[in-house]
Length: 440
Image (cartoon, rainbow, N blue to C red; front, side, top):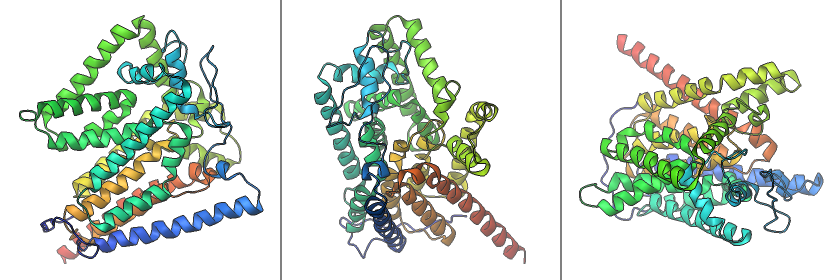
């Protein structure tokens, strides 16, 4: 179990060789990531040259990717034959008379106003604005986390940008998650710094920003709950109050009739849980997807309807079990605040049953936060926590590397779960070993 570690006074501009003794751990992570990147790029090139596979298809979906659209709305290609489908669905819904009608729309009213504004512009201009905003938020977040750090931290940031497959898939799909998570991390860090009494304007700006983010992806409320200690109780109340109030006002003013909108939102979340349209349980990276993939490989056939229905009903239970594991590791294994926050980010992918590959964008942010903690929060004295942190870093790195997509969706998320189980067993063994030695 982690012990108290001595605090190292931070320097203004630490050098590559003067970070802390944690720099050896960081170097091991960098070596693993770079070797993995070179190896997987080699596999992709070999597939392209000798198996004549499309490079685009190896790392993402396909170049010609027309999305499902609501009745009466036709999708149009944006770049060549590429549609950036996940952007076109909310954009198309914003063009309809009733955005929460008989369509899939899990975005809460406050968050959906963002797409109502974008729908004012032509499709290509609208997507360009959306993409620029997403990439700008990525740069702001990276700078926010890495400011004042050493060369090794900046090198990590560069490596992550070059190797992060989830970022590529998120951009390729036109997914909102890249912008969402970046704004979440920035506003979360700001709210730990700004005081309600002395910096009211900046404070409330970030509260409202976080309310918009929670309206885009409500499951991020779990992140707020798992990291309650990082914010004052008044700030938590303000975030929840602002989110509820602003969404209620948006619903009353812009999305009439109210009953139809509420019914549409409810049905969308039933789909998110796999309660309707069991095919939604496929194609994702959640724990439910791993169980379905395991069933397929063991039995050599697609699971029957009874098994799919059972998995649908167990979705909440499986997600709750994963949250319990995260809470346990944060409480008893990891002592650094940044490590706990980074591990909590993983719920973005593994809890919601229909999480797709682009939800793994959190891995980029998690590694930046982990490196930040290893550099600025002092040396890890406990060898047990050092090894656990290294396993966590490598497990997260596995999710960022450019694996061929078919493996990325079925095997790699399972390796992440294996890493967490290994950390649990490793720490339990060390704990029992220490107790045995003390008795002797």
